[in-house]
Amino acid sequence: MKFDLLYFIFFIVILPSCTLSKNSFDRQNLKKIEKNRSSIPGLADLSISLMGDKNWLEVHTDTLTSIPLRTKFKKLGDFSSVYVNNKDTFSYGHNEPIDSTVTFKRWKFFLGIGEIIYDFSKRDRSFPDYISTTGDYKFLSLGGRIYYRRRPIPWM
Image 1 (cartoon, rainbow, N blue to C red):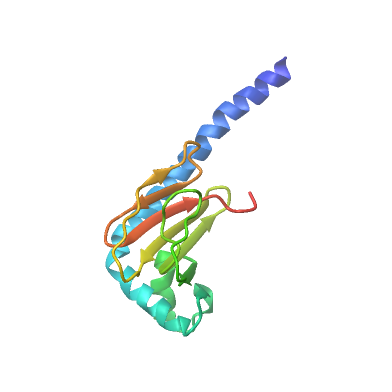
Image 2 (cartoon, rainbow, N blue to C red):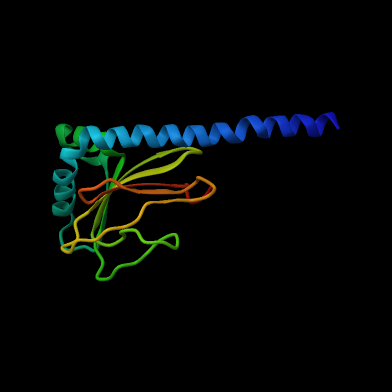
């Protein structure tokens, strides 16, 4: 009985702290977006220019040789991914941009992957905000073709 009570107290304390940590992670990333909003389209264009004729490219910021460029990319994330496809696809069962996007990613163990998404599609699109009921997934439209997504780390 005492053992079960300890587990119960442990889960009562731990579960809310995970949610609070995720919300804190989101706030940090949203502040980064607001602070660096003007540089997002330029870095997205640079990521696209690095792509060449490929349909997909991922750039690790640590591999960039230019220190000023690496610093600019690091402000937005540890990875920059460019996706170009010929059709719209949807992920997680709801609308969100997958094709014609540049994604800047940061990840934190147990908190998930925070992504700044810049939509460079030639046609105007809009996607609704979505927050999962369990709080492990969040997709927010921030205007100006910029979106924020936090998702769980795939293997967790």
